[in-house]
Amino acid sequence: MIMLAHHSSLAIQIMRFLLISPNQLKYSQIIKEKILVLVWIFSGSEHY
Image (cartoon, rainbow, N blue to C red; front, side, top):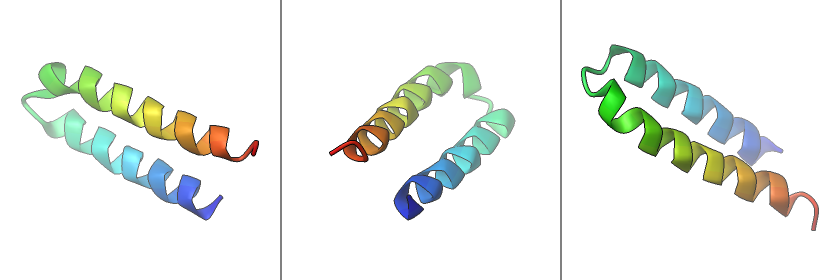
């Protein structure tokens, strides 16, 4: 659970960076997919 919270805060920092980044449109989809994969991995590992 600590790891999940850590990655959530990391994701928030990344999203904040994207808000001020001129390349937001270029990278937002890639970053979003990586965040979703991280969340899926850690949420899935809790079931085992």
